[in-house]
Length: 368
Image (tube, rainbow, N blue to C red):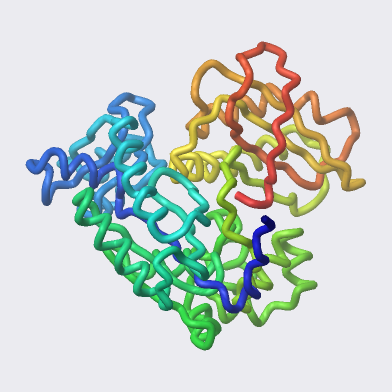
């Protein structure tokens, strides 16, 4: 029996559920003495990276992807707890079991975050807001943890909504409210806009959704390449991406177009050094475990080439990305070849480590 087509995007009912400081919340629940104290989950080592910080710690500037050493400097009373991934996976399984009580159209993004399409749902509940409210209540009842939920007609707005009233929030964006809501959204909160892109946008005078909507497609495509179309559509509340139950995150990456084509090894490495902290932030945010580093370049003739190397150790830090890129760059930079775009990424390791890996994982550098 074939599955029916999904309704038109405008009529979809999408929920984005995001657990509140998930890892830290599990630790505080299991150790009540941590309540009210600044807590971060990280390996307490010189090169340890914060994966999650609770809201008390965030007031001091402690956030994911910064080093544990810096976190301690920002908050001298910070309590660093080592991660217990098996415990987090167990709680995530309970949460996903709750999701399945309402729909099987679930797109997991990480242990603590998922999209649900409840346009058609198992209990036959008409309002997605009511489903989101029930899911939040069941999560609290069965795990003792809080979640924030966003409800809208597309994935982009559902994600924005879930962030809007954290922690323990519920926000609904109706179709007739979308444009007004988007107008107020800071540009760095748009899907696909990392720190580097946000900085470039601010230089162009784009700081929020309203200013982004005033930009032409031609202008956005000129400055941001293929991401320009997505930005143009998001500013207008257009996002036809489906909730994909089979989707598994295979990579985390970022890319940037050079201001001018170059064949300079120094200029390309300088750009990679600027992108590396952004990739570190994305890896930490998505709790991504990968051992394969990928370097991608696009030449002046628009042909692309990528090289990868698989390591025994997990790749999580900017310094690792820079070292890996430096080793791979000569293989994608023939003498005199002009480069217009550079991308770096981390992929799941499905192969044994190899000192001369020819494994070329497919990474959509524009997506993450």
